Length: 205
Image (cartoon, rainbow, N blue to C red):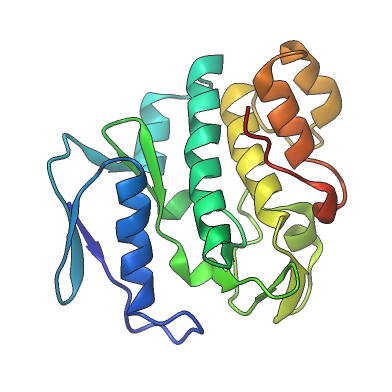
């Protein structure tokens, strides 16, 4: 599978760094890669599909164990990026690859920003119809926009919530999550969906 390096993007994180980030994310899941001049090749994988195509085969909902694995998948990526001093502003379902039907790789690296004083500054336009935008990004009306980097946590939680319970207009997260009350995933999602982004946490248990 080949991934374009997107090296022509005008952005603070250069086109040289971002392919290495994709490579390192793949290595988190033991996927070896080869970086060529204009693409990244994923080696020895059985299948690679877009998130939207994966959804067609796993719609509308998936089971608890699968949902927990998706959370852990993106949590590992999030914590890796934070160690580098970077974070994605959100997950974009049109820019996620699903490898071997179980590994989720975000490739919206134009939405990757440097963390400064616990905040990221969003410079790029984004789709307000994305169901996995944090409330902060949904309510935002200007670019550039500075927000706590943990806005990503609610984006992750919304994706998992959508696949486990079903995200609808006017969803009441605290009430709806009671169907899995007491489980590990209940607390993971609850902490990521706190109203204030600075209060959100990813708990490793």
